[in-house]
Image 1: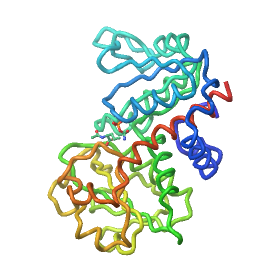
Image 2 (image 1 turned 30 degrees about the vertical axis):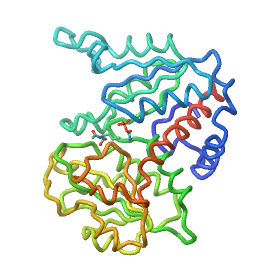
Image 3 (image 1 turned 90 degrees about the horizontal axis):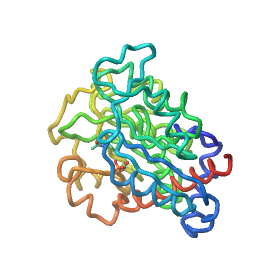
Length: 315
Ligand code: AN0
Ligand code: CP
C-alpha cells in the first residue's frame, strides 16, 4: 500500500482486521520494521485520539515521530496555482510538501472540511495537494471527506463484538450544537459497504449525506423504526450536506437514550469520540456495559499500526 486516504485503499478489509487483531495481541512484534524511519504527523485541527494513537502505533513499529500542530504553528498555506501571494498565505503547498518530505518517510495529515466551501471540501484540497507534491506516502488522519483510520478501528471493534447471526448495524444521526463534518459518517458507511450486514442509516429529513457515498445503503427517516432489532448503534452528528454545513436541528428528539436502546437487540453503543454527554447521548447509555467507546478508541492504535506496517513494507 502506498497512501492510505480511504478505507478502499486496503486490498481486503476482513484480512486487515484479522492482522490488526494479531498486532493487538503482540504490539511489539514488528518493533524493528520502522527503525531509522520517521513519520511526520501534521495537524491542521485539534485531536486527542488520532494524535496519541498514531504516535503510539508508529512507536510500536520502531519509528521516530515528529508532530506539528500545523494549524497553530505552521505558515498559512496557499493551495491554488498561479496566485499572487500578497495576502495572508505565506507559503505554497508546493514547497511545504516537498520540504516536509525530506524530513520523513511518511506524512500523516489531519485537515477537516471547512464546511463553508462545498466544492473545495469535496476536492480534498489539502490531502490532494500533499499527495501531488510530497515525495513520500500520505496517511489521512481525517480529511474533508473521510476518516478511514476511524473506520478501520470501528471494523476491528465490530469484529471483536460480533454476534452469532448477520448483524444489524445502524448509523444514527444525533444532535450537536456545532456544525460538524461528514467525514466520520462517510467512512463508516464506506466501511459497512464492505461488510456482510443489514446496514441502516437513520437521520432526520434534511441530513441526507453525499449520495455518491451512500449509494444504495438503506436510509430510514424514522429513528425508532431503524433501532428495532439492531445489534450495533453507531452514533454520529453531522451538519447538513444539502444545505451545506448548516445546523438544522438541535432539540433532543434524536438524542440516544436508554429508552431508544430498549428497542434494539441489546445493541452495543458506538461513537468515535469526542462526545458531548447528554446532548448526543445520555450518561446512562454511555456509561452502560454495552458502550464500546473506550475500546473503539483503543483500537485506533491497531488500525494505525496495521496501516503504517503495510506502508513501511512497501517503502
Ligand atoms: C470531529 C468531527 O465530527 O469530524 C472529529 C471527530 C473524530 N468532531 C468534532 O469536531 C467535535
Ligand atoms: N475519534 C477521533 O478521531 O478523535 P480525535 O479527534 O480526538 O483524534
